[in-house]
Length: 386
Image 1 (cartoon, rainbow, N blue to C red):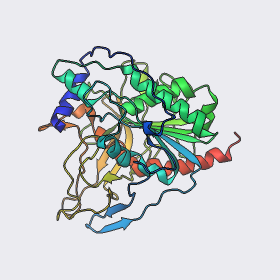
Image 2: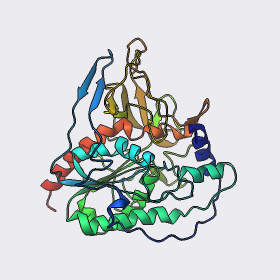
Image 3: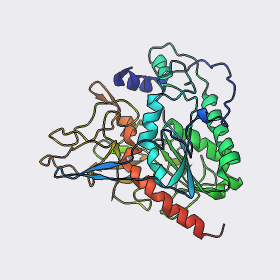
């Protein structure tokens, strides 16, 4: 499926109703094969190189060697976004290239500060979205995807956690499932005291207007400083020059007494801040397969899997057109040899889906900022009277 087909399907799916799929048997998350990432083995989190090529504005390239933690004191539990090309409405339990690629891009770097856990789950697929686009929806079980994540979580807590602090990490569909998991499996339970934070990119998390908790998550407040724990960080990204339209899907909720939270991982206290982005160096920026960027005007290849572009992007949480979003500024100089814009817009053909913003790079934009928060939160968690 081309990128154009995928995006058109995504846009159409919001107005279509699919028939329900027959109930499926639960997964056994005691089986290693049902995990993309687990500690102590070779997998999508432990084997890819984490080295980064920094591209300065003058085009100078510096390769930074990055190593994984040998004895991380915290765990990170990740639920990936919509990406499966499997033919059914729900994906199967076999990890394909698309699952591995997004784990490498969005989650493997947490291995520098965490033990990494990422279950495979039977998500709603891009094939299901496409079937809605053409008016012939295939069956999809919306509860199956959540039940898988919940079952994986319960297995992790029973067999692996052993009282360790943890961070939840998600994007898009994965963030929505984690939001529900917090409400149903963590809030009001002993696990809540172990949660350093939940980093929920690319989804709306509702609170009563002017409040830091309530609505979607009754007991979990917004993170407002780096050393805060048992809190949630959520954001949806938009170009400063292309804010969400009045009828947009992100940054707002239908209930006029509520609003969505926006917390910038690079500056939880607010204000404009340079973000510490990490982008895949080749094809596959964001969730979709895209052309490889030209990192410098000479189009010289990058030899590391990841690229940093120091100073190119800055961001702050703003309210615009009634939406609370992460507004992204590009500090580009057309005269210098470095790339001026990595992309990340949702588009098909020449049309840019403005209401999706920079959804494809919600995580990449603040990747290192997310990782850097974990040791700060861990230190605060260890220091407090638990």
